[in-house]
Length: 360
Image 1: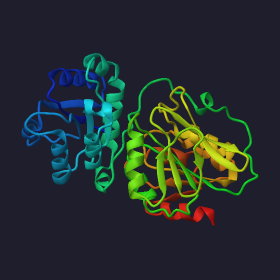
Image 2: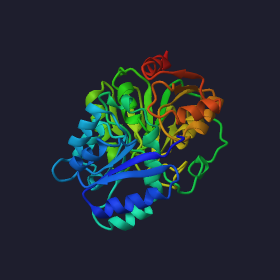
Image 3: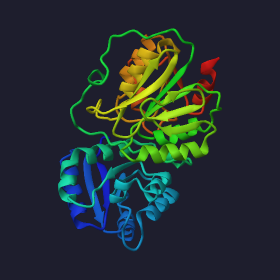
Image 4: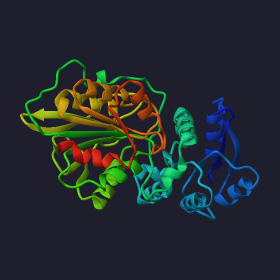
């Protein structure tokens, strides 16, 4: 953006308003246009100057954050970053906020708040920047939006989890579909997985998400889909009609035992500022599935997955990137296309059909 991102902070805690404002003040491209102690005060200020991004608490007096979020999305869709202590528990209340159209989440602890916010200043700035770039109108489809918050921690590659170099085993015909996504991905995954038949090849998914949310997200998708969707555990089989979602805060890799595929869930450092990392998953699919893999990289900020998708293509796998028009944030697919990793570029509506055709 040529001008500064105009930010509105809405939180009933004066400490939160002050510390968040100080955190983003260090960023040259963000300006706090106003703060408000509750949504009604916020609406008064927005009548004079509309923000580019809103940081919003959920529990507040006079009007709760979810009601305010729904009002915003109905009247004038605006990127919203949730900053709430409810995120600690992965509560159903927070999932409602995500379904209402929030772009991302910052988990706010109940104690040690000031220190946490100061330590998380890079996360806050990254979340605001990602929100400012989001195509919010695409978030108004009936699905929960993303939780990814990139950080400025050490930038590792997938080498720290799975060293590169080994060739793929090829003595199986079973297909494996690997999907990687971030900002806007929860909505995109719902649009894809709910349209798949139980005959679709086994699916492994990395969605950038905090801990505790992936299980709830998988349960939601499972209730809406014909296929089985669940949070992955080590040794879970990858099989037709099943999608395994990497747990938040852990990396997931594909493995082989004879002709059968399974997953391994491991801890480790952040890769491309994320855990789980799409690059880690894609590299493992390149190694253990090779030409029997199909890689799909969808909406998200940053470049996680671009290198891994290129490794999959080099190993003979089919590869797909979501197109710009249907992405909430055209970051990860853009980088994959630029790297020559994408064999095809498809819209979100075209991807389910491509996955169904993968086993033909």
